[in-house]
Length: 380
Ligand code: CAA
Image 1 (cartoon, rainbow, N blue to C red):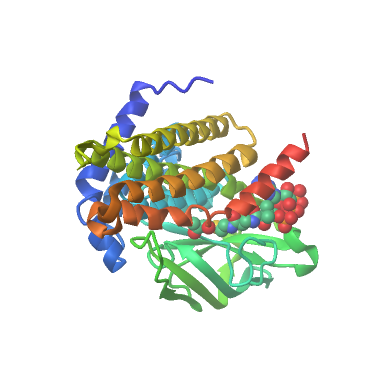
Image 2 (cartoon, helix red, strand yellow):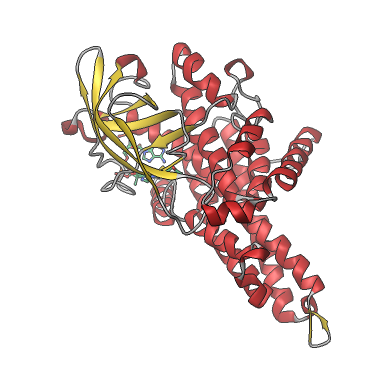
């Protein structure tokens, strides 16, 4: 497998790096403090093609490969992990699912505005009592002939307040368990669809996370995705790709924290020399660099295999499991290297440490990734 980046890949990486430095870095601390969504920046990400990166241009996307996507998310997350999750959810959970599984009419109506960045989307699977145990859906969609009636609550939905279109997973026939689950496209503003209050979070505070409440919401039958009963397999298929996005976000948090720690270690003096000359610090940086490289290789491999059309459930889970651990370890060590400065907001690494934690939780906790990996290897 060749991981040499092409000129086009390097251009995309540079464009994302320039965008992050020019548009995301200013104000990132203030947005984190105030839990302010990066509206202007997300609009510009759409104009640059970052919100529908892998979607065919005929559906409004940028038609790029998955390595380009990994590169762009890493650069964005290095500076602003909140903007990176907005991007990851829109690309991987929303656009990729719609492109792969929707019919032409649904694609033209919903995918086009989402991939071109005109609007953003959200993916609503988790519920108050169905997080990791995703087959236990309590939200119901009752088949009424030409439409479904949707009732229930979804929790912790990224882009929940700012999305225009929502992919909602619901139980249609409880007797059939996961084979009775369906996925629907629901529009903001439909009668009975309410958005709950914004969650006050530890990290990724610039992104918005809400519960969604559905009371007798009428969903036309043409808004169901795929055949009756396909919703759970749809959600699992979409999450396999989503995990590459979150792994890349985690990689970006790790490399952002590492770069700041390296710079600081070369400048800060203690005991008569720059602290990088103390082995205690140099070895931390050596471990960080090694782990980040390994995480990056897993992300690239998962991306290449996705584009080759292979089953990426195992490699995607490995990439997310490992990269999220590296994000956590690296950001903690980056704070440690900065000493007292690392504990204050101005130096960015404390935010990165807070942002890192969610990468071990959403789109499948680390424990769920281990379930996916262990089931896969046990079949071999
Ligand atoms: N890829 C493809 N199909 C999969 C799959 C995968 N990774 N994992 C399970 N499936 C399929 C199985 O093949 C099976 O389908 P068939 O019956 O057609 O063969 C079906 O799903 C049910 O599988 P299991 O019997 O294994 O179900 P389970 O209940 O034992 O376990 C699970 C399933 C893997 C634990 C699953 O519930 C899971 O992934 N849970 C985590 C959910 C999750 O990631 N939530 C994240 C929320 S989204 C989010 O965070 C978005 C955000 O806003 C950032």
